[in-house]
Image (cartoon, rainbow, N blue to C red):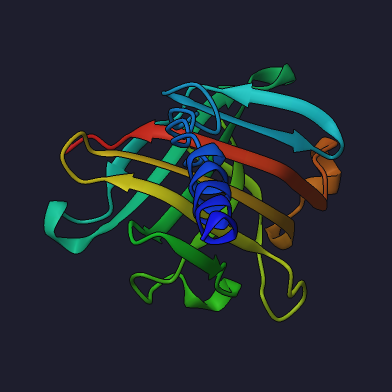
Length: 185
């Protein structure tokens, strides 16, 4: 009987000494990829950032967006960088080839140059038939706040114009791209 009581007390002591695991701390709050209103990337391996304008592609119901920036280069050449028809649904998407500009909701990207805003000089754009690793990833979309975050990498090449004649590149690589934008309606 003493043995049974000793075993019972020993088991009780073992059970009492066991403790429940501590509650896990809640995960850290979500940290955005980049500051709201910014697009950053490495342009031909050099850091580059700008404030882009972001809009729904056609209307808020289409669930796609576009963003672009216009900057003046040396010699008063206007440079327009545009990303178009990117779905708001989180996921990975490949940029469409050059000839798909007319097809809606296929992501596209291009850089165009002009003088005085009306004399076209040339353009480089993504071409999925030439570079297969051109992609954009939508990481987060907030349909209430109308904000979108994501990453991209793309290599662009000349499709029209004469970039070499004005010292403009025939190929551009945009890597380590990040965006966090408010979509305007």
